[in-house]
Length: 290
Image (cartoon, rainbow, N blue to C red):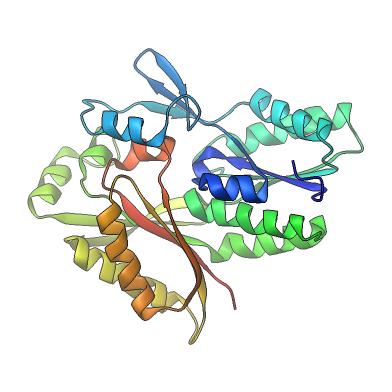
């Protein structure tokens, strides 16, 4: 870790943070598990984005995913403590959709018995993907600037209620295979070119309706963001996709022609999340900054 940062930032592979941010900001990630047939894969460790994307596009059934266990987090925390971390902030996907938060809490309790002087704060972000990722990025920037744990926690807790994800799937097939939508709805939606819009509220997935075609879906995304913001409010935004480079550029152009973005970047959906929505997924994660 960077010796100028006394606070180490930990999050999960599901935060979908690009490698250049991980390296530049010294963010440490713990990988989710993907059970594919008889294989046990580690998200973005033993299976990478493009390889999994290629396989998933031809899959007849979808794999199961599992959060890291207490031992995975304990190993990470111990390594950081040995590397000189004095405090650890651990940020996790919504506890209403994953066991990561509880596993991290258990690991923190184990290490406190061994290293009582080490402060570990475990946070349930009630979010996923780059909403979770934005919290880790902003926390890491503050840590490198020498900000106190109390101030970083305060900012993170504000972001929990402010950060929002909106995404759409290119096809309803993967929602059907994962048991999240019925066959009739899947077939009807495919024939009508319907694109479901989903988000997250209080840590749970919520539906925002459907749109006919990607262009209408993207227009609706921009309208939803605009309606949620105060006049002249600026945002930071991350665009997220699974093998949909051209589509995500279209979404970006629609957003940034109507909203003031003080920072934006594009990232790929990690395999552990791609499982549930499939190739062609596009979306965004944003939060207001003023």
